[in-house]
Amino acid sequence: MAIQDHRGVWVFLERKEDTIAPVSLELLGAGRKLADKRGVPLGGIVIGHKVKPLAQIAVEYGADVVYVYDDPIFENYRTESFMKAVIHACEKHKPEIFLYGATSTGKDLASAVATDLETGLTADTTMLDVDSETGLLEASRPAFGGNIMATILCKKHRPQMATVRPKVMKALDPEKKRRGEVIVETLKVKEEDLRTKVLEIVRDTTKKVKIDEADIIVAGGKGLGSKEGFDILHRFASVIGATVGASRDAVEAGWIDHHHQVGQTGVTVTPKIYFAIGISGAIQHLVGMQNSGLIIAINKDPEAPIFQACHYGIVGDAFEIVPMLMEAFQNALDKEVQYGGKI
Image (cartoon, rainbow, N blue to C red; front, side, top):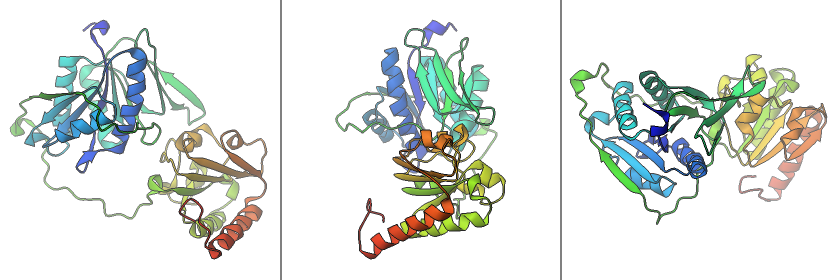
């Protein structure tokens, strides 16, 4: 199939409970920019049972057209059934760019679709752009352990596909009066033709740190020196109502659990306030927190890269500075002064 026959930017609209997952709304925002630059429509595809109402949500968040596969066979996610729907849509409508959230579902589905369509897939993308003339997707992500940014191109195959990490793109403000086209597609998939069955859905009952939902994060790095060095961060976080985060170096050293890790191989976060304490600021870490509302860095090294990415920087010993900050915040609390509705 000729490359020039493909047109449009698409987003896989992943479901979360009874609505569209936040990462998919973020991708509609990113996709809108790509589509406008290219001068093509922005499409979305939603697969499930009783999901047609979700199409209007996608339109409100930027989609021009939404393709709906609504059937009891799609009630629960299965690679094979969802892959059949996506491939059916791609072969029929021929998008040139297709974006998925880098979630467990998105990564599983995207890799299966890319294999079947024999096209390229860039994983864990953190930046997207498009050549307005050629339609060539420029998907960028950290490489070689986060030491460089690599831009990956798919010149010979379509659709060009990428999974994008949650929280790195920004959703548009919804427009309730926005109108778009909803196309209900029909695809007969028989239960007996599927190799997997959903017997039971077990909800996650583990008490993992919800670091990606935190408004304030106090993150520590190698500069804290030891596991005991994180004790001061836990106390600081307790005073200001924050969640504790960490760099990859600190996690790999065994000073704190992996669920706290921020960065390319950890979690991408967008808190209102991010304290980077004893963190040098490697690219691998920066891509996970660079969209924070306010970044405050504390580091002994005045040449640390983190000072190029922060809004406010303090050069000095964290074990001297953090106690002073705790005292100041505690005094403010004692006077019933609120900062940002949290502290």
